[in-house]
Length: 401
Length: 215
Image 1 (spheres, chains in turn orange, blue):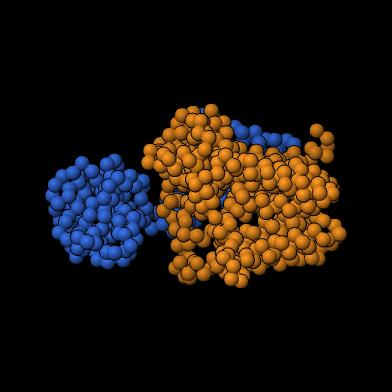
Image 2: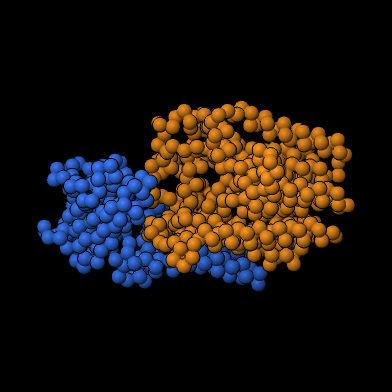
C-alpha cells in the first residue's frame, strides 16, 4: 500500500468501528421483512410477485414485494449468505419472532452486506476526485456524516444498492464510458425506479451524439430485459404500489390534460437542458439536481434521502462554502419523516436494547401536546424544498468554473 | 498515537454518547410501564349490554396501575363507555372507563387507575363491561390462546373458557433513574447471554480500537 493511500487507513478503520458498534443495536422491521422476502429465493421461487399473490393465505406473513426484481434476487443472495452463518433459528426469528435473544447477532450479520456497499461508496467518491485533499474530504464527508449512517444502519433499507450503482455510473460517465454507465443505471433501476431519471446523463459524456443515443437505447433495452419476465398483474400491483410516479404527478400544472404537468418534470428538464448546453458539461450537477429535487418535491420515505447524499458530497467537496446549506437541507429533510406517527421512526429503533423503548413517547406524540405535527411536517417539507431549490439553482447557474 | 487518530476516537465516543445516552432521557418520561409483550390476538368477543368479561390476573410486580388491551371498534361506531373494574377477594377496589370515541378500531388501549401498592403475586379479577352498548355496535375484545405468566382463569358471562383476554399489566414507575439503570443492566446481561457472538463482537471492536491506537 502506498504512503498516499495509507493515510486513509485510520479513517476507514474508525468508520468500520463506528458501524460495528451501532449495527447490532438498532432495529427497523423493514430489514426483517426484506430478509423474509429474500428467503423465498432459497426455495427456488423465481417470480416473487406471482408467488406472494398466489400463496397469500398459506404464508405466515402475508405481504407484497414492493421493489423491482433485482432487489428480490439481491435479498435472496444476502439471505442465503447470512443464513449459512446464522443457522436455522434465523428463519424462525424472521417468521415468528422466536429466538429474540439472538437478535444482536442477527442484526449484525444482516447489515454486513450494507456495510460492504457503504464502504465501497466511500471509496468510489474518493476516486471521483484527483487531488489528495479532495479525496480525503470526500471520504470523511461520506464515512463520518451521521445522516447516511442513520439511514443505512438504523432503517436498513435496500436503497443502498441502487445508490451504490448510481455512484458507479457517475464515475463511469466522468471517464466517458457512456455505454457501461447506462447499463449500470439500468441495473440500478431494476432495484428501484428512480435511476431511470438519471439516464439523460449519458448525453453529458464527450462521446458523439449518435453513440450517446445508442447508449441510451441499449440501457433502456437492458432495463426492459430485466423487468420483462416479471411483467404481469401481480408485478404491477406490487412493485408500483409505493407509487413514485404517482407522487411525481401529484403536484403540477393542470392544463386540462388527463394528468397534471409535474413541477418536478419542469425543473428536471430545464435543469438538464441548462447543464447540456453549458460549455462545460458536468454530470455530477445533473445527478445532484435530479435526486435532490426529486426527493424534495414528493412525499418521501426517510431512506430516499440516501439517493442524493453522495452527490451532495461531491458538490460539497468542490464547493465547501455550501456546507451550511447542505446541513440545513439534511436536518430539514430528516425532520419530516421523523415526525410521522410511527414509533419506529425514532426511539423504538432501540427495541433490541429493551422493549421498554416501544412504550416511550416518540416525537409525534410529544409534539402533539403543543401543536399539530402535520403542520410542522408541512412547514419542514416546504423549507426543505426551498433550500434545496436555492442550492441547486445557485450551483447550476453560478458555479461556472 | 497521532493527533488525527485521537480526534477520530473522540468523534467515536461522541457518536456513541449521542446514540445510546440520549434515548435514555426518553425513558425518564415514562410514568407507567409494562414488562411483558402482549399475547397474540387470536379471536374477538363482542362486548355489549349485559355481557360480562372476567379475567383473573396475578401481577408480577407492586404498584399495578393499569391494563392494556386491543379492542375492535370499526369506524368508531361505538361511542358508549367501556368500564374496567378491578376486584380483590370479591371487593371492587379500582375502576377505569373510556368512551368508544377514544377507541380506534383494533388499537391497543390503556386503562389506568391509581396504583395498587402491594400487588405482586396477588390474585385480581378484571371485569370488562359496556352496559350501554347495543348488539349492533359491539366492542370487540381481542382474546388469545397463548396466556402469559400473569393471566389466570377467564370467564365469559360466568362460563369458564380456555382462552384469555390478550392484555398486559402496567406498573407505576417509582424510580426513574432506577428504570434507566435496569434497562441498560438488563441489556448488558441479554447481550452477554449469547456468549459466542458477544465474544466475537467484543473481540473485533477491541481489535479495531487497538488498530486505531497503533496506526
